[in-house]
Image 1 (cartoon, rainbow, N blue to C red):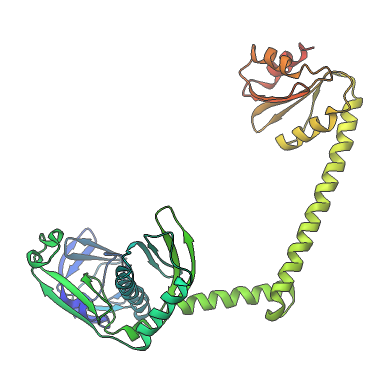
Image 2 (image 1 turned 90 degrees about the horizontal axis):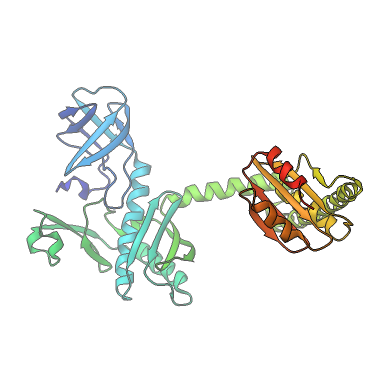
Length: 370
């Protein structure tokens, strides 16, 4: 195991190419970390070129850039990305220790900026638990504890799962947590900088807790501020009046929707009345969707004096509604089903159906009803 990752502040180095393979390079040394162990990849440059990809083959990290590389190799890792990734990784280790003392464990995590979270294997966390987690992490940051690394033969580690490794790296974070891990970590807990619990939700396996850690909080703050600023501009109000402005806007939207629905109902009633005046039994209705066809048929249901059938082509299907003043709608539907493959149903007064059969064929069958 490379011990180069014991110092997360090691961001640059000069090295040489060890091997090139199909545009991928391995080097005698590297400061880059490729995604593994729940930690995202570093970003940065090699000889001034952006690193476009990183991948592991065993313990060898392969690097890719857009253009070919040649010695000497100058590497530079993006400092902000390194701090972002390392802070949440170390914070989650501390939380591993915190929950272990409660007899619980973390079963999955999210570590990418803007989407940091962990899932604990309990759906019944104590009241006030999230506030306690935040206080605990704040104390771990304010009263900084050192992070140390040690190495041992995998066969000597208590867990037999690690016997296959020639060397196991043990990460000890003060008295907060100790566990095997090959990823980058802060050198002391103060370097996590900050930790905030945002929200939580129940999952099928436990509780998912959304958090923001380290420099991720800066990004989230900027996003929130920009959103508030945009809303202030749209609503033409100050931040202190923003909630009231949004509530007023939502109320106005609900009122407008109510008025639009009422106008649609009135229009449907007018259309239904017009259809009732038409003498033909089967009426082809154009420019309607399935919802409007249903509303039209129901609007006619209590006023119809003779059998009326509405038919329309909707989304490639032939749709229809049978309205029977004599309560024969289901019987007529059965007659249609004897000739066409139809889905649908309803009451003795009104049924609706649809079929993939050609519209002209459906019209012929409907004309024979009654």
